[in-house]
Image 1 (cartoon, rainbow, N blue to C red):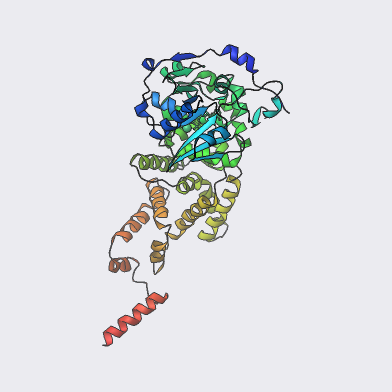
Image 2 (cartoon, rainbow, N blue to C red):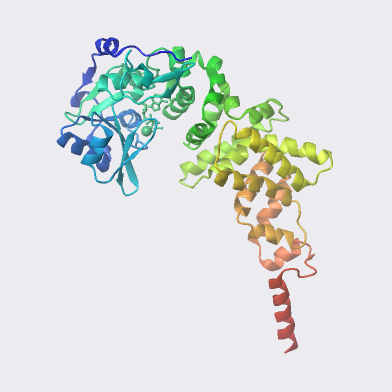
Length: 446
Ligand code: ATP
Ligand code: MG
């Protein structure tokens, strides 16, 4: 079904007389803006184009926060942008964007998007209300209506450093309110990812989702599985790796969105024993937040390993009960859970492989005699797997003395390590050991 959801451009223009906040009426100063973003803005202006900062950067600057990145919007077409900047690459199929490269910093420059009219309706296709194709260029007063939340739709004009507000974004910003532009239900239907964005921004900014925008979420959450799994992967990383993972998780569950992203995990959360697995997952997310706060790296595979552990663990347990070995059970369970999960969230192989390894290594921690612990210690994934074990032990799922054993095993000298493995290194099996043994024999005989 193809149907039109947008107002015609004439309707929009007449509705749109912006409130303009002059430089003295808002708190954004150029000193807060990245030099490269300023260069892009000035260069566009000098070339005769309009140029604005827009979106998350303006919203964050108003809060005195350092923006993650700077998005620029202009009336120049992509090809015209390319003419202005040598360091420019055009990207995107659904909508052409320009990336201006300055070493590691990229400034994204978009052309104003247009509004739909009777004639160009073919250009913007909606299927069951969802936006599939969208490639019209327009003017600022058309562009604004396509943005999600009013606080994301403020334009900082490089011409005179004013803030242009068509949608009451400043007012909402002052009231710490997240409000969708237009009819909330239609906007969620058009792009269900906006429900995730609502939760993400509310949590990150400490804003409240406006009641009108909050109300339809639970009902519309079921639209999320229609989103391409690769996009949901990107979105999930943003949700859980922005330093507010634990709160985000709670909010996603509250709005019944979490189960749409991780159905197996949601199911396992409803069968809780003594607060586990909720405690395990909560602890894992808390750790993620803490690491980010301390400036330490966080890896997506560890996060996904934690998010999916409970369904894997339960399935593996059932297989062991049916007679499978520990390792085989985890391997099979991992495979099953991953196959189901990637239908929702398509994580790449570089995530799937190490995630699986972290799980499988859990079953090897029990083997503490002979050469095995030494081999495990040398495994490139040992550290992540050990951290995972500690987390399991802390939340009562694994034996704390097992985790303590491994902590100690890493700390002590080799002699002590050998004693810990109960001196069961009887027959040297590896070549190196044979050689070493041979060397010792030589020296003792000389
Ligand atoms: P942050 O970068 O801090 O995560 P952001 O608001 O900048 O937040 P982006 O994904 O970078 O988010 O998008 C930039 C801007 O593009 C948004 O502020 C919004 O105006 C618009 N936008 C992005 N995604 C959507 C969407 N799904 N629907 C409507 N507008 C969107
Ligand atoms: Mg952004």
